[in-house]
Length: 356
Image 1 (tube, rainbow, N blue to C red):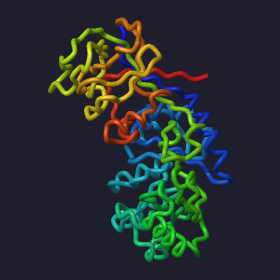
Image 2: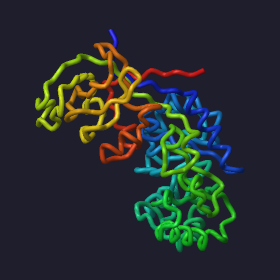
Image 3: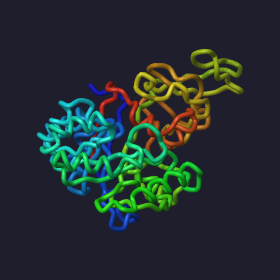
Image 4: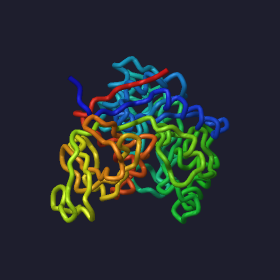
């Protein structure tokens, strides 16, 4: 017994994307971001596959890092949110994790627990205003970490609009970064994948790559065409129905047939993570041909207009996103972003991994 709706994860594609992205990064160190279950791709399997192809991995919080260590992942691991508690910081020392330090409270914990850390990253707030110390406090923070016997430090910040390199916010953040990092003698990390691919300058020894690692597209970068989508959400046609001109399909009677039409029902819905907000016309590939979504997304099913496809029968192949359509295209029809669609797939969709 196997469910028709599945997600296939191509680990080889992720490896190929690392190779492609490294080629554009010159001598920068490569950090693969595997937070949020590796953007929905499965953090343990992805990390195990790529850990020796990158210089470090990054997760959001301590529990994500612990899960990887328990699975045998021994690569350097950065915790982007840093320790939430003193106990988290103690675990960082025990498991050789790199915490990001961004608050006075965390600095206090470092007084007694810092000696066990192999490395700490200092986050400075250059304008995104989520986490981080004011840049003017950088020297003081470095001194306090040194007093806590932490010798290896890296400074970092995060760009709010890296896909818009000429925007006022991006240029302002770069000015802040450059002016306060001029005297910093250790390593630094400003660039995420968007910053690197859009030619943003600024001192950065590390690049933190997340969405692009999985083939996600950012803006109109030419490199996007070289990246391989690692996730394919697929299913099979459950039923085919014929509706007359003027008849409606689905909840709320949103879609009404303009002519006699053929409708394929597919067993996937928002209960699986397919977006409820997907508009009529969202592309779905049925039997190798693109067909438009027709009607509101249900919890467990969607309906697609396949009138133009000669032969569609129950069991016919369906691709919701993958090579075609790309996840970003589905997201654009749904008023959201591909990041969300990747990470929102629910546990009832089985994952199948392929690699060569």
